[in-house]
Length: 176
Image 1 (cartoon, one colour):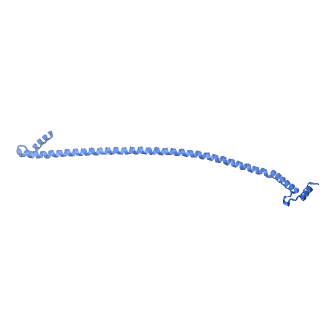
Image 2 (cartoon, one colour; image 1 turned 180 degrees about the horizontal axis):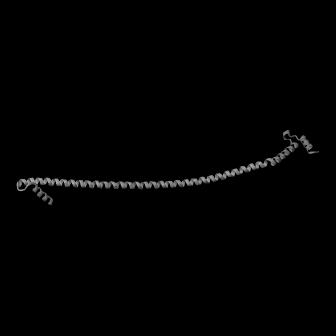
């Protein structure tokens, strides 16, 4: 008896439903097809599939390395940016401080110049007042001399002439 007849006899004796019955022939054909298909895939398709997976794996590794490198570069850029911002802030503070110093210096210079101008104006005013006082004194002397001459001329009416008496009175007033 061969295997097929034994399987058929077993099938006939079993009381299992048809879909659960074991068909040896179907099983042999299925296993033969599976191994033939696996052999063909291994011979022709497996190498290209593995090559494609290797290429994909390399691409993924390269992408991860590139991402890591970009992350490191971004960290360096961020630290450089922070450094540049600190330097810019320090420069801004320096510029502000220099501007304050320049403004204080300009204010001091303007104040000094205003004091000098005020001093000059004050000196000019004092000189003008002194000149006016001298003019007033001279006018007062002249008026005083004229009054004195008139008084003296009334007193001495004819002893001295007017020019000599004015000269004499001016001399006495200057001596005082």
